[in-house]
Image (cartoon, rainbow, N blue to C red; front, top):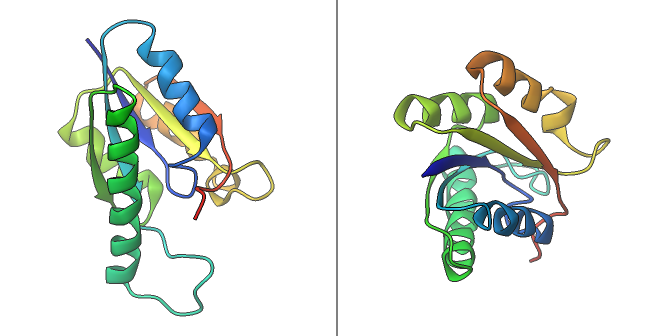
Length: 138
């Protein structure tokens, strides 16, 4: 059974990511592990690590329900606020065959500006699929 690590935050509930998950599921038996970095919310002028983790946990819970409702075998965790560190931590605990990185479109995505998909690919020598999505609906 292939295992995929999915890293997403604002696009975790996007239609584009769910559609990609469904395509992967049609390829045979698979399981997914979601990592939601506890990144500071953009819309808040002040924030605490606890509030960032709380927001990420709520997103994770909704995504776990949505993906398991779509038939996916899925687990998940809230990770470090730095997405590269969140992925590193998860890969130390989980053996995966591929990483799926879901981001906002280029120009808006901080993760793309930092080169996250390429950093993961180079550091961990794993296939990385990049999915561009829209923010999770409120």
